[in-house]
Image (cartoon, rainbow, N blue to C red; front, side, top):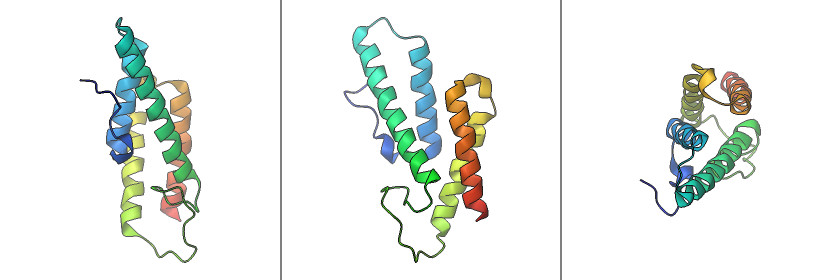
Amino acid sequence: MQTSEPLHISKLDDPAFLAELARVRQRLEHPPEDAGERAWLTRAYQALTAEFTRRARAAWTPDVQPDTLMPAPHHRQPNPIADDYTRKRLLAIEVLLEEPEEISDGLEAELYALRDRLQAIALA
């Protein structure tokens, strides 16, 4: 069921977000005949892509807090919740990369790069 706006994607956890991105991308590969639904899917995919970029930027930029994209305080203590968040993101990426033929080459490359960055964060 579609709504006038895509899901509040910024509120989705990473596995749910990546599943929604894959679902919308798959529907766009075989677009519906209805122009309104095609337009909605296109807007949803653009919003999902923007959110993916925001999340990737947060993961790839060490001095940025993931939810705000604001510089992190330099005196931050280790955060077990953030560590758990990183582990969950890695798990979601690994699930998607189990069947790389199901995703586009560009997204696959971005997922491998994000996985490498998150693994470096997890080891730090």
